[in-house]
Length: 197
Image (cartoon, rainbow, N blue to C red; front, side, top):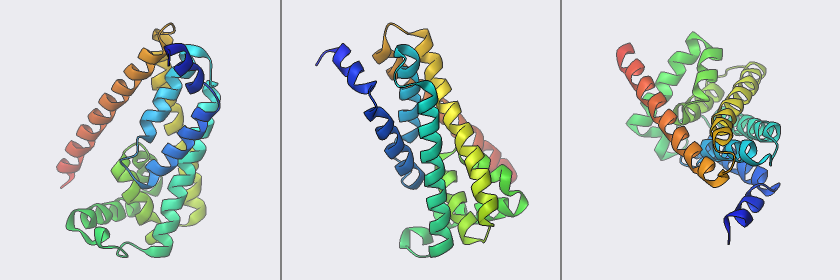
């Protein structure tokens, strides 16, 4: 398969379905590369014009919102001790920390957690389990999902705009940049977390 054929396949409407599925799964199973799929689609959109950049943002935002709402609903329905993995000391600490932070400011915590994979899962489950009002959570989650989708897409689009004649290289580089940004965010949040203790 040639590079042109790969680009034609990737630029079709199927990529939006792939982005939706990966982002939705990433909200629940944090090892799924949802962020990377959005960034790569943003790079492809900027480099080739297909799929449309606005469609990438919209699909990613809807998928992120649905995934966060699903976690919130699971927390509300199942609580935080249902399965053995939830009772692991490290996971318990994450839930406890999320609960304390939610009590101090729901909007800030839900919004910030959308950008941090493991925190996102803990916060969304905890918000549901601790009785954060649904309307409040869903409103904040919608705004956070839209901002997150725009951010991830723009990171990819910036790389795609720099390499318009090399869409596959733009996609690969955008994924590397997204991984680097993710690592930096993880490092900063870990340091902030240590200072609060």
